[in-house]
Structures are given as C-alpha cells and as structure tokens.
Amino acid sequence: MIVLGIETSCDDTGIAVVKDGSLICEVRSTQEEVHKKFGGVVPEVASREHFKTLLPLYEIIKEKFSEKIDVVAVTVGPGLPGSLSLGLCFAKTIALCENVKIVGVNHLEAHLLACLLEYRYPKFPTLGVIVSGGHTEIILWSGWGVYERIGWTVDDAIGEVIDKIGREMGISYPAGSEIERLSQSAKGEIKISRLKMEGYMMSFSGIKTAALREFRKISSKEDYPSFALGLQNSLFSSLSTKIEKVIEDYQIKEIVLGGGVAANGILRNKVEEICKKYGLGMMVPSPKFCADNAAMVAICGYDKTLRGISDDLSLDYRPDWKI
Ligand code: ATP
Ligand code: FE
Image (tube, rainbow, N blue to C red; front, side, top):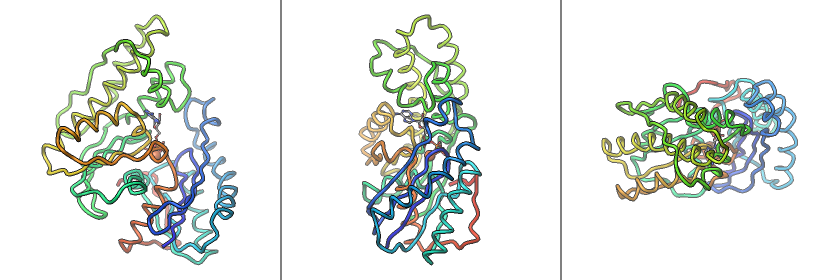
C-alpha cells in the first residue's frame, strides 16, 4: 500500500510517501525564517506560505516517485485553521484527480506514530509522551489505535515556555535547539523551581514565571548557559515525575516520545534513565522525525488504513481535535 502524506498544521509544509510501512521519500519546507522577525508564527503568513509551497513540493515528490498511490493522508487537526484548510484542500484535489481514498490524520497521533518510521510496533500498554510547541500530553496507548489521554498541561506547553523564555533572551523563534546548545557549555546551574501538582495533570506557567524572575536577576550573558540548563532541568524533571507516576500506576511496557521538544538530548537522557530504572523499552524518533514532517502523517495514514479507517471528500478540518 502506498500512502502520500501531507502536513501543514502549523509553519512547516511537508509531503512524503510511505510504501508498505517504509518511508520512500520526503520533502519539507520550513517557514522559520519568515516568522523569525515576528517572534512567533503569524497564522495568515503561515497560510500564504503553505499556499506558495505545496505545489512545488508535490512536483519534487512526483519527480522522485512515479508509482500510483493508494491513499492520501492529511493532517486535519489540531493546528491553525488556515494552514489546515490549505493542506486539506490540496489533499482533496489529489484524491479526486488520482481517484484514491483520503484519510484525515490527527497531528498528535502522527507525532506518536512517528516512532514507527524507525521502530517496530511497541509492546502495549505503552506510555506515549507528546512534547511539542503547542502540547504536553501523556497518552496511555493500550492497543492498535486505542489511546487514552490521561494527563496534559492546563496552561503552557513545554515548547511554548521554551520559546517564550527564548524570546526574552533574544533568541529567535523557535528557541528550543539554541537553548539546548547554550546549556552544553554550562559550568553551573541556575536552579528554577519545579512543578508541584498532584496526579497526572501539568502546569508550566509557574515555571515560566519563576524562570523569568531568575532571568531578570542575571547581569551577564556568561550566565545564560547555566540559566538554559536550569530551565530545561526544571521543565523536564517536572515531566519525568509525571511519567514515573504513570509507570507506577499502570503496567507500562514501553515509552514512546514524540513532538518537536523530543529532539532535546536532556529530555531524551532523562527518559532513558527512567526506562533503565523500570526495565522498559524506549522508542524515540530521530530528531528530524520529532519536528513536524509529513513522513509521520503518511505512516499514521498507513496505520489507520490498515485499521480499516478512511474518510471521504466531505472530510473537514478540526483545529481543536484531541487525540
Ligand atoms: P504541536 O505539535 O503541538 O501542534 P508544533 O507542531 O508547532 O506544535 P513541533 O513542531 O512539534 O510543534 O515542535 C516545535 C517545538 O519544539 C518548538 O517549541 C521548539 O522550540 C521545540 N524544539 C525543537 N527542537 C528542540 C530542542 N532541541 N530542545 C527543546 N525544544 C525543541
Ligand atoms: Fe507538531
């Protein structure tokens, strides 16, 4: 089965082909440079960029891969309405012209299933941890297509905190990889308070406020690395505490990490330590598949098609779609 995946939920445009569960080719175009000067993604600008980019990317894919496709998989939510509608419109056009099926994909399910591009299917029950620009969610993945959202942030997502603090530090959007790079030369750590919240739910706005307070006390750029380290340790240790709680409460066999922030080495190491401590398997995509991409959409579409799920051309976009 050949699946063409299309991703346009936020500021990255991507198209990919997955054949029988393996990635064949992939193209993507990021709008980072365009949004940099605004300090974050401007929805109208993002839509316009997708509009300009989709067709040229599709032409590149057609040059690389000429076999007939069976399914078009497209992200229909969650995401920016304008961006989602452009990707969906493009996907419908292809489905109509090629006379193939269409399947709508949840962007967060795609972040979780990105692991299938490089790993086998996990052993259930699996703990899915999605850490991205707009979401921080703990998912109990207990079977093929069976997900239960058991914990999420009630305010800021971890990626959002990192980007907001980054802006304060003069780092352009998105700040995650630069903050990680800075922390690699830290000689000490500026401690930032951690999350104190019962249960599986999370809140990161308190850490953001505490971090801003600490940042304003800094008098020299020399302290930026220690601050960057403290910020990441606070955010990721808070998340790790929740992960351990779920492991202790459920019979978890593996952990799957996904989302743009999952590219972070400090987070990956913390989760790896947890997996060693509890004797669990761990599946984390390569950094390039943590960031938004269409390969994860295509593999998710492949998985859904195998499960017998498909949509028709009345498919609508769902900006607030929960996993
Ligand atoms: P969502 O997936 O919630 O809809 P999104 O698609 O905009 O949001 P992603 O592209 O999945 O988000 O992730 C982007 C986020 O990942 C940004 O906040 C960015 O700063 C962060 N990020 C990227 N690389 C790293 C890194 N190495 N360390 C920490 N954060 C990172
Ligand atoms: Fe994403």
